[in-house]
Image (tube, rainbow, N blue to C red; front, side, top):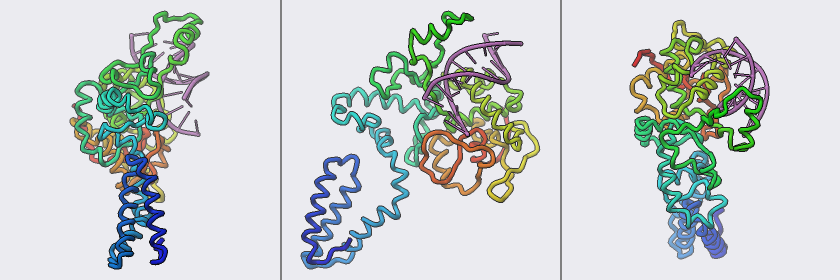
Length: 366
DNA sequence: TGAGGAATAT
DNA sequence: GATATTCCTC
């Protein structure tokens, strides 16, 4: 990278050109812009004769480090676009790709929507994990919960469809479970499906939602209180979870999945209730988990989910935690979307998630 | 009505 | 293949 003096001019020009290009996307490439600018300055100083070592170093380092050392950091920031929008509602997130040109127009409105929406999407996290930056936002969680907005059902019915992508918007915040399309006709008739489909078409099907860590924690916590997955019923769980907008079906589904997983890996089965803590294999080591999730959950959630880990906590720490993990044994998790962490893992699957959080297990009841 | 489970969709 | 939603049955 370091050009020889004779090449500096060209190099600077090249850098300037680069900068011009970057300037086109100041929002997207703020750092690049800065880096290039610094590089240019450095080169200039070089040219001028005052060779400030730091410049060279800085320059080269910048470019290199950014890619190397901070690489990972960037990865975490990849979602930046989206997050950026969260932090400062000045940016458009989802729309950015296809709507850059038009976003200006929508900005105002969409911003509002977004902010509202963002506020409400804590438990449900259709989007990937938040990062550290968001940590402080846990407060949101609280609010959300309070309002019952914890659960973001995601509705995409007719109305929301309008904007195409995102708009889960606004309305969804607190309640409105998306689901119940309800059987107006209910029925038993063979036509149920057809009629529905005909009426709404595919809109009918709820969009899939992923259970966020928070949500799952609540789930586990409820499970624990109810004596485990086997004895708990969806309705009870839902009630204990106290998540607005959460439907029985959703809980049931999650429970079903949870049970399946536990069966597959019986190891951890005693959740909630229990007792003996099973050991599970983590890598080559056997670990004694809190109790499958329940545990951690309990604590945390216990009374104060609020504080907790907010989404971020969940993920961020995760990365940090060395541990545990592994869940591999248990399940593969999956959750959703891509997560920045390389670490593998974890998280969310019913099983793992909790394991993540560690311990302490005061099981208590509300 | 609700639960459990299977089928289906994503 | 995993996970979520919907359907079916009890």
